[in-house]
Image (cartoon, rainbow, N blue to C red):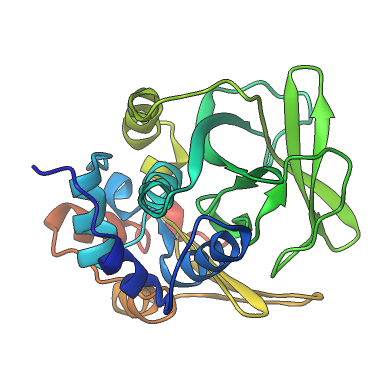
Length: 278
């Protein structure tokens, strides 16, 4: 275990050409290319295995192995690249509000990054699934900020901020967070919880997402959707495991692991309760 970071390999993985520097232009380019290339997915936890978060494991899986991952994996990998380039970064943990009441207080189960630039701090987050932030946000409340996809904004709370996305004509909340500094070790306990708890949606269901130009691709169990910017969604239910694997490899760009536990989990999506149309 060397725990060193191969920046060149990461840049090749996301298709980033040319020089990089610790500036806003580089940060925007890395976030845009990362979210378009490295898909969000939970194949490990869904197949009965908790993801490892050490840097060597992240590089083997997401870079050399051409896999994706969820928030801790995605953002810790991006953080390593940013540090190697010379950015000042800090880890933040968040309480998810997506699909919950606005006053919901859940665990700090999500991770994002604060990046400090010369003209002020920014928020980046390449690991929030189907609503992943594809741009870079100023850490300023009540300011509608454009991204390559939907507009986002930060709303000030008594103890921090709430991140919202404008979807159609409605602002929808993703999560709430504060500015308490965290270390990579602080991600280990929530990572273990969401990857192993029997009620975690990362254990009982399959998720995948990727943000492409002008659209977002999402997969929930066997239900595939294409969400077009400006409105309109195409949906269809995949027929069997072969079609599901082809979708994961094609649209989501994943090199699938050869793992019996994962194959059994995928098969369950087409047998029993999960196969009931929703």
